[in-house]
Length: 93
Image (cartoon, rainbow, N blue to C red; front, side, top):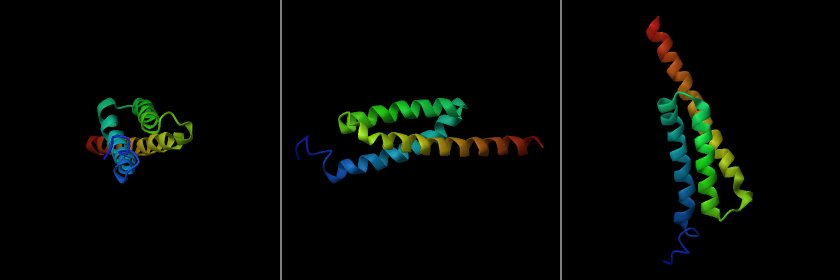
């Protein structure tokens, strides 16, 4: 297999789904590390923008992937924040 054929093969399409899982996990871990949702979202947006542009060759029509990855990361960060708050609240009282 040529290097040019790597991203056009079935393995290249799996790379996007692996990136989704990585960014979902990053939403949880990033909130635990930084304790701020916006820091996790900014780093996710920057990383996914670089990843998508490098993956697609600077094609602006794939920005929906960046928005989707940032949104999924926001969902997991907010859910982690809620769970973290509930655990702290019930430990106090």
